[in-house]
Length: 293
Ligand SMILES: C[S@@+](CC[C@H](N)C(=O)[O-])C[C@H]1O[C@@H](n2cnc3c(N)ncnc32)[C@H](O)[C@@H]1O
Image 1 (cartoon, rainbow, N blue to C red):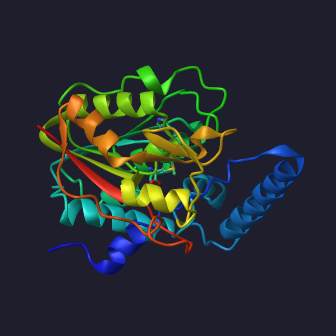
Image 2 (cartoon, helix red, strand yellow; image 1 turned 90 degrees about the horizontal axis):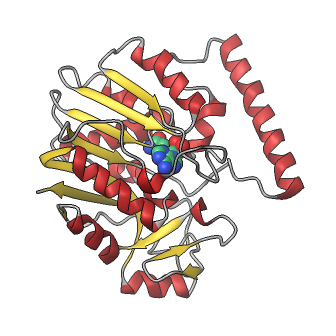
Image 3 (tube, rainbow, N blue to C red; image 1 turned 120 degrees about the vertical axis):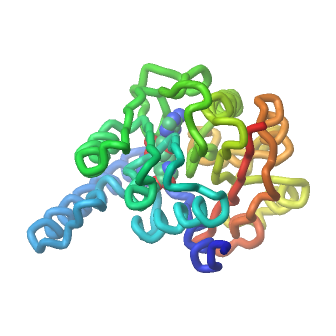
């Protein structure tokens, strides 16, 4: 049975937002006010007993985008199960796992298999350790200190030559959710290569991305998409020259070429999100599934 329409709609609502973005004094002040507001709401949740054990506090949830944490996570994992054939015995690698939005709903499903998530934000990984690994030891998390302008500007490692913390052919599925849109071309190349390395033959790499073909490129140029990618760089389009990794859209044929070079093929036509077909927001990203030969 396939994922329902509403599940897909919710899955595709990984938003084009990053509240970690702070440019200039006013933006910084706004961000500070926003963070203080979230702290106050977290405190209120605790005092009123509204905090839930497997849902991170609001101040941690904010950097992964808007949307209902539990609902979006459930939709994504439902898609992995119903559409991609994820089994309870499978091993899953979640690159850029954030605060466990995918991990939490998988805890009740991956009963015989395992999960490894890594991310560059230390407090996200700390929360996952204490909330998830403590209850589900087959769910592990790793902090990797990669430099990234928005999420981890002080990092010491680079995405372009980073080795995933995993052995070769150790996983049945790799998730790259909300990640490719923050990676530059040499970084995408390495993350696709690493995904191929850690996947078993027949394993799947599941990614969300802003994908561009000729038709979408025209819409982007004419400003007829929900998100603007005003700077064309041939293989990709960026939103901001000052902060290129804020949001990047990729030509689908480029991603296919990179994937093929590393032994992955398009397993099905991408599921198109709403971002490229109209200017209406909120809008959603495209879904890409690659398979290891
Ligand atoms: C939009 S959030 C999505 C988080 C998570 N995948 C989810 O769906 O909830 C993007 C995540 O990618 C992480 N990230 C950014 N660059 C990364 C990199 N080079 N390697 C690993 N994680 C990265 C960020 O820290 C952030 O947690």
